[in-house]
Length: 123
Length: 483
Image: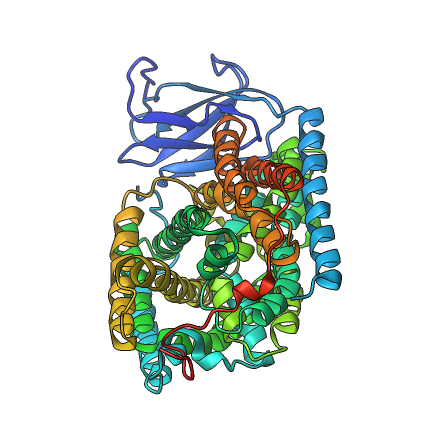
């Protein structure tokens, strides 16, 4: 059966579209089973089928920095959804370590407050 | 909203389990609650809870549906550091141990964390704290209700709204019947169910799939989950630690336990509970890493725990998971309902509306507030506005801002009122801002840091000289108190 690439069946969404922690959810609206394709190329010249079935969403995670494109194909009639683009752009390590250090300072200060207070404070 | 069309359990099985549990839990609630006559009995189990039950209730309350569902979610999203970071929530239990001891000593007649804030810092600080506390309690209640709906939908395909409604109705009913004594009594059973369930599932996951396959498939399909330098997960570590500390330090769920334990039990109970709880989210989180090896589709991150367990164990395992997570949910929902109702009755009803309320009126008000909270929670659960972790860490911006006002209020007589107030307000605002601008995994950390800075600066500029004896206040309805 010829594939009509211009007709759209399901509607596909990604949330968020810029993933700063490497995870995002793909959600499609279709009454029928679909195949979910992932590609680094917006034309899907080389694409991988990462899901096939009746569910209506998929969580992606652990992705490295980069740009990925997704679409779903109706298994019954072969029609494709819209294409969504997801940009994975992790926070910088400098920012991460800055927050880590801040958290460590707050934690240690709180610990110090409690331990010295428990030893010295009397009603 | 209903995104699972390939559930492992038949809906009829799901309904049967829910029905059986409903009958059991409500019967237990009636049995344990029938002897509670004094207000102290109803709301604080007579202040006589011993070490074994004390430890079990602390641990079981901290093992919530969030441990069994949000921990795997965090592992799926944040990887190895997310899994370990979640277990840092046990630090809050450890750190509360000395606080529990101090609270019991300074406030022998105390009822709520609100009582402490009012006596320590005055009425304005107390009202701000109440807002934060009620907001957090509501957020937690909503996360529990949502988790019930999500769990049942993930395993049986029963629509989200039905499962959510049933969970809330059961827990409201059982809390109404039994009060706090019933809450603590069933915690012991629920703790055993949860512990055994998690251990069995993790053991079978390793035996069925194997570490090698789990590692290989995660490395191939979701490589950043194994990256120890993944920035978001590094940011998450202390955020989760401080979130847990803030949750425990401020929440009346924990203060009510401190007041209910026998003298000398609190410190050991909380320390032991922290030790017992710490491995649970690691085990629960590990389960999520099996997703690639199983070629399992996870439609929403907060579904991953029950879905993986069901996939590995088959139908029997899905039943086990349903029972286990249902237990976790109900053990925490009922605690939260009971403790939140105490806070509302004491700090809003009696302190603001009816200062001369009799004990009977207080009990009636408590029951009505439990009902009202159940209805409000249902209304907020219905639209399913976020995933479990996103909702939970939203409240982190607020609760973490109370860490220093409370800890400093208990141990540092120089901590002053303006420091506490600006700390809570500016800490919450800063935490909220960072939640939306950076991510849910930094909100609590920012809230705690800003709050600490405000309190320290204010208290060093104008130190207070608080008299600890001002915390000794007897409740008018306590046995032996003058009326």
